[in-house]
Length: 140
Image 1 (cartoon, rainbow, N blue to C red):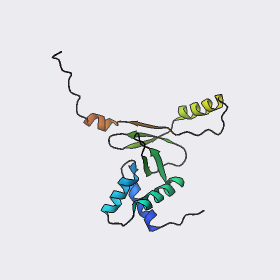
Image 2: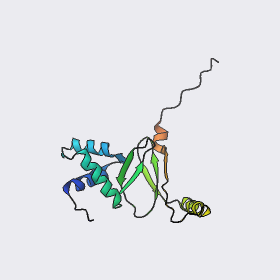
Image 3: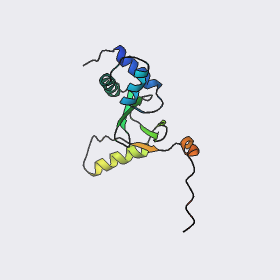
Image 4: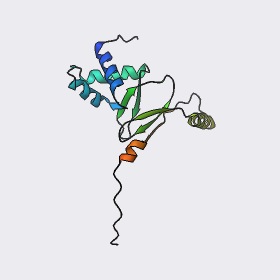
């Protein structure tokens, strides 16, 4: 079924492209509400699902289990490094992961294996700007 393009979906697509890194539907809705678009949260969820299904958006789960999205700049299968602090995302190719996934599936008699690998950490900028850890108490 072909989805017709609506002004609401166009506005969600634009807002997603303007977002820095991955964002939740609620955060994107808040940004759209700030711009007085009149677009409801349910419409944002539907638009994001459509954009993800068409490959125009990446969707993954945050470490807390929430679905997060960002405009996709790469076609085809890829993975991400995502900063837990600022949300910065880097698309990466991971041939070792691809080979491991296929080999592991084959060892267990599986075919047509698919996988999702996203790595969450703290980027170099955020790590450099993090406050230093307090020194251990030396009073014993």
